[in-house]
Image (cartoon, rainbow, N blue to C red):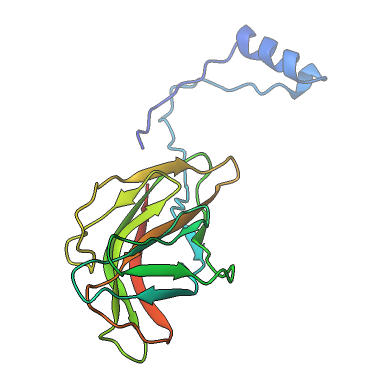
Length: 209
C-alpha cells in the first residue's frame, strides 16, 4: 500500500461542497490547512482465497465382463452426463450393461470467489481393481468432465492409454458457485477372468485459480 500525503485546503470550495451534501450548511467540515505535519491513515483488509469442494463418488455401476482368451478387450464409458456405453470387440470380449440405472458421474460442487475462472486437472490415478481379488483390474483409460478436460495416460498414475492433455475451466457464478461432473472409461485387461465382487479405484482432482 502506498501512503500519500494529502493536504486538504479550506475555503469556499469546501463550504460549497458541504452545503451540497448536508441539509444544514453548518454541518460542513472546515479543515484547517495550518502547515502541520501530515498524518497517516491506517488501512486493513482480509484476503479470503478459501475454496470449499464437495464431491460424490464416480460410479461406473454394475456391468458384466466377458474375457477373450486372446488379446481382444472391451471398453465401457460413462459420460459426464451419466450415459453408460458398454462395448464389444471383434473377439469374445464384452462389457454388458446390467441396466440397473446405478451409473452416475462424480458431481463436484464448489464454493469460491464470485465470477472467478477455475481450472480442473487430474493426477495419481489408481486403476479400478477387485476389492477381494486385487489382481482383477480394469484400466482407467480416460477421465473426462463437462468443463472440457480430457485426460489420458497421466504420468505416475494407473492410466496407460495415451490421451490428449487438456485442462478444462469454467467460471463461478456471481454467488461463487460452480457445479460440474466427471466421467471416464474403463478397459479390460486381455485374458482376465473378472469375478463378481465390488471394484474400486481413485484419482486426485486439483482445482486452481
